[in-house]
Image (cartoon, rainbow over all chains, first blue to last red; front, side, top):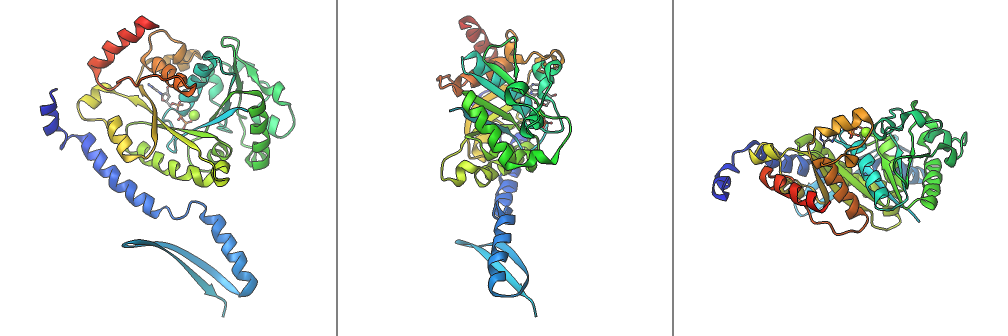
Length: 79
Length: 271
Ligand SMILES: Nc1ncnc2c1ncn2[C@@H]1O[C@H](COP(=O)(O)OP(=O)(O)OP(=O)(O)O)[C@@H](O)[C@H]1O
Ligand SMILES: [Mg+2]
């Protein structure tokens, strides 16, 4: 097939659709895959906090606020 | 000191074991003292692919548990000088998932061998983590297909987080092998091209392996394709093995049918 033919074909082939879908899916995956060693980090944060306060649980969330990525750590304390 | 290559993928059934077997033979042919280890604990597979299933006496778990020495468990390939194999155990023993034992084994292998290939199980837990733990390089195997590519991205993201070397601040080499490429489908626009895969994944290309019916024949007979005459996949693996040994082998276009046929003839001439 000529490059000319290719030019038109590219937009509609299933391979092209696959690439577009993958780009979006992977971008979302990367965004959502918090910190790779999440469990370890979580356990360590809890250990440190417990030295000073009585805690129930912590919740860790990663958020994208435009320019920056935000890591939110919510500490739920014991009443 | 040997170099450790972990062969990983995320998604199962993409060609890790096939890649491990063929690259190990390829580097052995290039003169490197090579060992290939089946890390797919509980699902021994590589022994069949290598045609060494009748020679397994002790396995990786026996060595890690101290029930056999490494030299007792290593199987020397009779056909291929420089090639050794360490089998996975057939049962999944929890003691295998012990980092210290894995480290001890890898350290021992690094003393004795130039190249060490670790064939990882599918998934991203247990066995997978242990193959990348002490790896110097990872070889990510991918098929030109959406779920395989997506999973590859996930494992690439996990490598630095789980690798000991990366934690020490050193760089872990990451290389991509695209396998089961079907030139006809790519031509028709029905299969994602290498170019597109490299656009999506941030990783260096190590090689491209075409779909090849002989891979099945190879596993039937226990003689990997790299040892077959004029097998497109075998030739691709041979090129990749050379690259791993520092030989500058140009990339061959395995994607367009005409070019492939033409180049096959040419490479055939120089063989
Ligand atoms: N280049 C190829 N051409 C044709 N078939 C292939 C090719 N590479 C691998 N295969 C086939 O794909 C299947 C899976 O290969 P293999 O066992 O190497 O994958 P794997 O990633 O190790 O799987 P698992 O995740 O289960 O360990 C096998 O049947 C094999 O014969
Ligand atoms: Mg396998």
